[in-house]
Length: 264
Ligand SMILES: C[S@@+](CC[C@H](N)C(=O)[O-])C[C@H]1O[C@@H](n2cnc3c(N)ncnc32)[C@H](O)[C@@H]1O
Image (cartoon, rainbow, N blue to C red; front, side, top):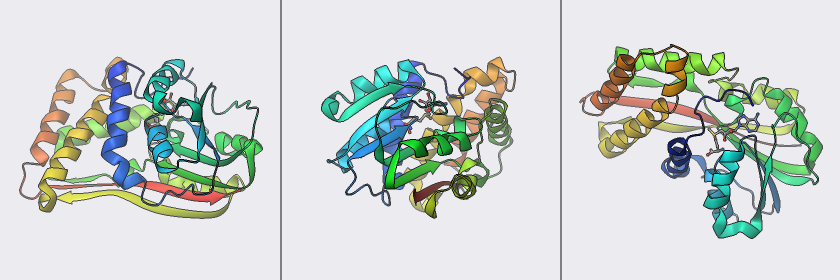
């Protein structure tokens, strides 16, 4: 299994569950699987998004694919409330071998980690019924802007993105989703932006998102330390800067992810 930016320790598994809660109101307003019955979720992790999908679309049965058995084991626990509606498949998304076809696909924060992600988009087509609905949500890390300009956060964030690229991932894959889907032969491709543009008008949200961001940044610390991309002083500086932002009267925190809907 290829090296993975965030790792698989229990704290990271819990972070994914917490993250799904923090971001749910931003991710789900447009996503619509009404009328769909069988959904394929690629890179389902610990089932954090799966739980939301099961709740929002009561007719869906979901097949969760992840290449990490420990993520799927945690997903089984997390989704025990709907065990009759979920199935777990431990496979590399680039080498799928499934025994059924689906009328819908969901991918969230997973293509960013997969080298040559276009191969996933090409591979899943073999398992999709005509008119299947697709909804993908992915990062666009170059969209991050914050004020005041703080060097500790800038340095760590650059190293974080560099680390992801060194693992074969793409921290800006959201911006490329349109081209990737077009080239893989999908139709009716629509792009949307979501995310936050926070300042002191929304002081509580600003504080919460700075806290969330700290957890996201720290989820890669172990790997980044091992790769000698950051020191412990760099980690502390990043944390200090995120604490400083929300206290600043001119604080701005802006980040956009990209969503795409399409069909086959
Ligand atoms: C950041 S997590 C996102 C999990 C989930 N979609 C969510 O939003 O909570 C990315 C997941 O993709 C999985 N993953 C990465 N590369 C993969 C691959 N080539 N095939 C299958 N799963 C992969 C990882 O194991 C991890 O669980």
